[in-house]
Image (tube, rainbow over all chains, first blue to last red; front, side, top):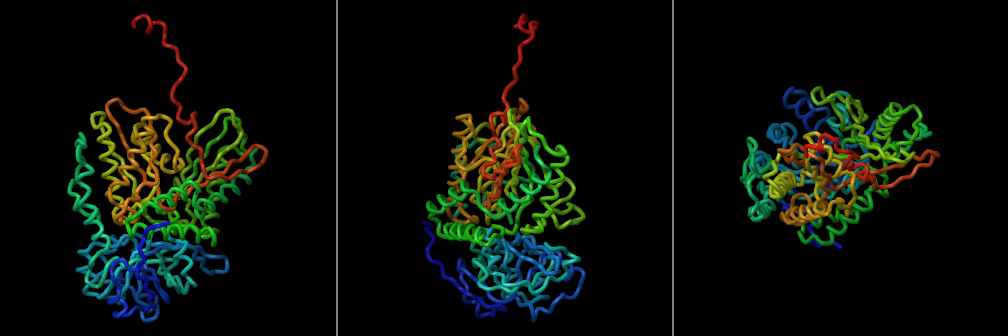
Length: 225
Length: 320
């Protein structure tokens, strides 16, 4: 079964180096080993808007920011059980990325759906950073298997399980796909251009609706993100 | 008499089944799509998903960490007797949700829309939702849980009779393309379409069509059944597959549910379930047995109540 061609597979040890990133091409499959951390709205707001100091030094927790909120629960003994993890849609974080790269030195962003090519070129390229997308996006069990242990959950009381800054020790964490490279190209946009080319003919012969809605556009080139 | 404790335990167990085990009909549908997919990246994604379902089953961990927003569908036999009545049943379902959220664990997805406050247990104001239907000549109660995500892949539009089938196809394409890009709606998926009703029932019917019918099930109206297959084919001809990559696996199946509507309109709703199609059902029998399955069997002939026995008044007959 299946018609996927064999893809180039790469294992990267965190923190990742510039040389690691230079070797990544769009569509490569990546697995991570080492420490990764989660940061999203709650963490970005506290650090970038309220000027709070990071709860753990980035020299210790690495340079891989996972846009995630885990399916996790606090156990009676105080320990934290993380079972499955998957990413949350990343496009909404682009407003913070410039400042985040400056503050954290992050080099790899792992998430869902990616950002626009425009964002990669404006925000990621100057920071020398690359975006990896989770697969599916529901591969929560496979990604969960890649977590050896929870190192810490910072700001858990203040931000809750979903928004806390989780530091995870991972081994063969993946599969992930290279969505942007160091030049800011996007795998999704490359695919979208091909798909868009065929969309007009699907609408051929279908009459227009009686009522259009405000703000609607027929421009198929317009990206959602 | 169905004991309250039995309701809670059964509801707790179906939360695990829904979160962890892919329903058989849906798995078969995904396997079929994976074998037919020739888009290279889409095929890679589908193979990873199949591996993920296996990992979830082996490890007893959720298929997807966005475990959705749990909701219950209760179908009660007209002769069923519940200890403590329906109030006790609802209490049991809320309590089972909280326990399961902690024990599986599920992601506590439910927060207040403005204050973002969170009880960390998926229970809150109006949550989890509980919807009801009834069945004649039965003394059992069926409880189905569905863990569907909440952000993408759902839309509503007021179409008009003049828009006809073209309008339905156009809105279907609009929605699938917009939400399918970058895989934000996590395709391939079962897509539910609500046609008719008022706006709220249109949304309810479409969501139930997506979440409570099995792959391969067809609407009893042959013309609607034909439209289901036509929309499925249309979705799979967009050129988009899993995660929005080039391919053809967009729609595992399409289900349409219909409700009588206002004479001037043709409301339509669109609901994509996801790659982790999460549903599980339990039947609680009057004698204490519990029976688990993956087919909610929600749309029984009684559920789609079509008509009423009615005699036209004599006065109306005279004037006719």
